[in-house]
Length: 335
Image 1 (cartoon, one colour):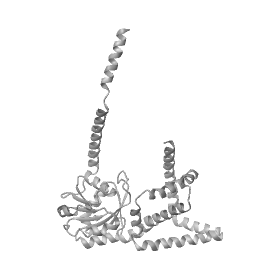
Image 2: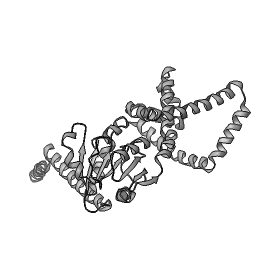
Image 3: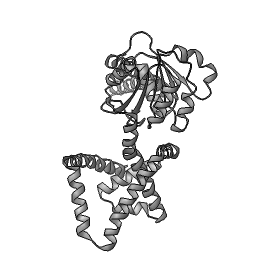
Image 4: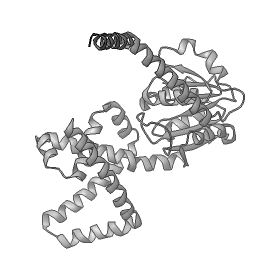
């Protein structure tokens, strides 16, 4: 019995000796994290090689911004030498700008043209590009300021994406497209989907895709507030589809108001487009006030015919989204 007791004590002492301190555990976790990061970087470098030979110096103006950081990280992963210019760095920027193969502008809309005007000293071999959500004005400014290759880009996603895989990047050609083809290829290596369109058509499309949607969302949120809506009650009573719509409204108001204001106010034609939308709203409101259900149904059917096969496609896509939404809601309720 004493022998068994001694053996048990020895085992406990040995087990205690094998227990790591918190500091040792933290150190091991940090080492494992570093190894993971290195393996991930090696894997990404293998999957995301550089599309450019020779000079790989990239300067990103606004590289510390949210979307700018995404490009900084990807260029570095692909073996480019990346420098960043922020608002207090211009005094020491001449050397890096003169040596750059690419200068990418990733700043807010309201200061984009102001920044472009500072870039008249680039070499004629340097590619000048921007990632602003409007294209006509910055593209015109870049073509005026820089005599080398120019291209306008618009990533159709935010900084919260895990990767560029299956994400759309719109390309608006400017000048000497053959000299920035490597940049287009790099986007494809990062698995982005590229779509080429003129700057004018881009801005017209964005008036529908972004401006109309953002403005309508702001108005709807404003209306909910002015009506003193009980959000907690509305959420509790909502079907999954309305919960998703409400989430998209709330999501906007959790972000930078300046960004969305700049997008909405970026073009005087945006106001004209929204006025036309307001007119259609009033048209259907008149039908509702007069009780003309048949005219309303007729309008509904005309729009349904116009959507064609896309209506069924969007029904299937939104159904899949609702499944994910339901899972997220259930998870939040448990937590």
